[in-house]
Length: 238
Image 1 (cartoon, rainbow, N blue to C red):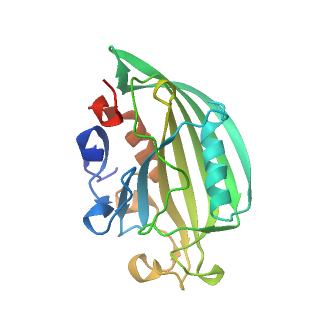
Image 2: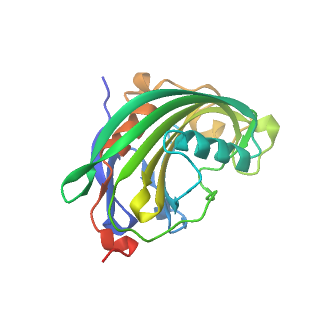
């Protein structure tokens, strides 16, 4: 049974909120984060959760949007891999409402095997620009899981790669021309030469259940299902 404690967290000055475990620390308390991102990490497990507001991609279909963003992220990081997508259904996000009508959310699940995928959780740089203009929410949602990616933290090279699992959710706010990305990173294998080895230890990562935590897949689902817009004025809405 999970020993995680949960709390609704204010995002983007409280204009948005989402619920996820308390063990995730706000990176902005330590270093500067781009104003269109909110980044949280659990240093003890080398896991991270990132919220990001981006320009709406008109040429990306709803049902394949999470996969598209996942592939785009891999390309940005000079990664190689193969992607398999499995469609899974439709859900609602109660916090995304316009005139008390919940947004309808479409979902997709996928896996990808990556080659080189460089990322530093402490110096995350967006792959796209953000749009801070919002009106109301008719949202589509796509969810994809990425498995077996090889990651070098910071400026470390191939010899220091960690194997991670990456989950990405895309909430598509069409009427306000905004794509919201929520991305979760979960280590699978820590390289002895990686910076992470000094904190969490080298070798296979301890499964979340053994540590009394929920998995990053569940963290992402919770963050998405509890996602709410509290102040539409943040995005320029009248």
